Length: 447
Image (cartoon, rainbow, N blue to C red; front, side, top):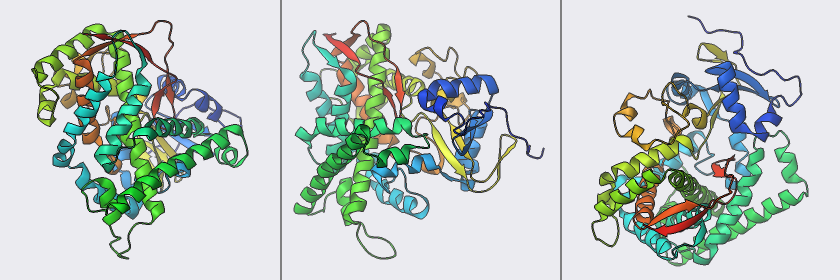
């Protein structure tokens, strides 16, 4: 069948900004409602951007894998350059491919497994600071812990006293990007608004920490095997020139955000889900206790034995994927789902929406780690579950994130259970990542 020239159905606003107001106000609800009302492919405008929203796995696979050469990054993602510059997250084409090749050795399985001891030890230290009956903010605790792990494992640096400030400044930066779809974002950042001043100060403070990390590594000579050393040693294939300070800064900031922000968020959501489902928390504790078997800490060899913990992680990533949407811009007219997507139009795919499709997940709104214990992962069509994206921009740090999350979950669950402080109304806050919209207050109890 030839592709259809007519547009797929979708909301049709007469406003100059299209659906931007509705999308910006509540993007998860908006995309969920559009999918439920208009089906697997729909069309609407966000300001001047012509958007095609797809949720069917076949269409997700078309855009991210089989027809990926027909697409590039969207202008929405490019706005993130205001913070991370031309890092791996935002770079394109040959630059992205070169950066990815450079970083692959650090994310090989053997290298990742070498980080396991640090990950487990830092998790144990965090765990041992808590007192029975104490109230903690699990979201903040996971941000601090994953920041320490990222700094030490990826850059072999202890940022210690800077941890709280770095997490706070990243939070300030990401708050700006709740307005990512707004056509006025660039203008608002240029105006002397209080939010814009906070944004610029946060970026400045992050730069101070990162340039200090670079300077420390230069003073100790960049000959190590950590990522920062490799980046400092690397030369351009064509010019034989090392990275500039700005290029180093862009990559370090990109990986600090990606290496701790996404994992911290999914861990916080998982502990929230476990607190609401104590039977699952008890089962995870029993597995951790049995695997640890009286030893002081977990190691890489234990990962395959943490089968139920892995199922919990898979289910947490399904319900609250840190990367909640992916966007691509058409480089030429291209067929997707039987429709012609015109050159320059944007295709959006949402992990949050597709992961909750009842055609692929029974009781999709329910937390059911046991759903992953059979062969569900093998039976799912490719594109139905993609928490780390797919195709040539598939997350390079997926293996690192899995190992870190499993070791953190097992280490904490082996000793503590977590009870939600009553009266909280915790909701997701979609920005670049899917964060909780405030603290997640928990009471820690020995188990």
